[in-house]
Image 1 (cartoon, rainbow, N blue to C red):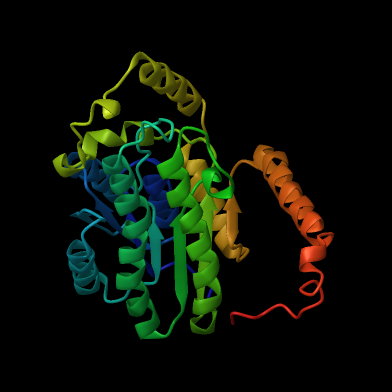
Image 2 (tube, helix red, strand yellow):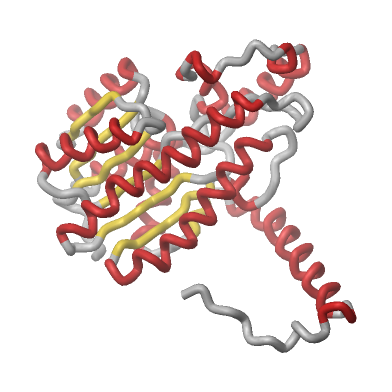
Length: 295
């Protein structure tokens, strides 16, 4: 299944940034586009832009942390377009930068609910509907380069993105018999507003803990992030890269090849750790054992 035209893509967090960049490029490929986003005002602007582009679009205000809203989005999509062929789990938040000793549990819960459970809820809702029509399709999960290795002062964000990479690897094998291609997008810095994620944070994720209050150090980190993001990749370039990678049936979609050496160092460190394990007399009996298969 390689033809996009006439098929339907559902994109969470699709009103701006990477989500909208992907939406616009898929729309140019002739797909029907369904945008789900928590920001109603931004969603309206995105819808208007796609309509002006000649794209058939459905825009629905929704919160990815609520599976009921995912189910409502699915129903509205089927009513409008009849079938669902692609899900792009894009909605995500950055959390609040900070070390382990100052990261409060409310931040962890917020990041995990959006970045991890939002992906789980979307996949559990939409994938059965993609299977249903038997035509195959695509599942694209948006992770991050943080999914390839730890990011200092970003524990919750890193944990959520590592999980998204791992789930994508698992689901790739699981969905292959159904002709559903799974890809995980791991971008570096892109011109988005993810560093301003708190603008859409629900009140129940706020904390009265003094350790959660902003400091001068937080401001300095925020200013640095703003500079880095302003110099980031254009979201529409990311959208075109996603289409390119989907056509090539890539599991891992990278947008920043300059990070390759960083990832290679991590892999080299892991390989060296295996070498040390091989030389341990404690593990001699395990060395030649057949590797257990999970498939």
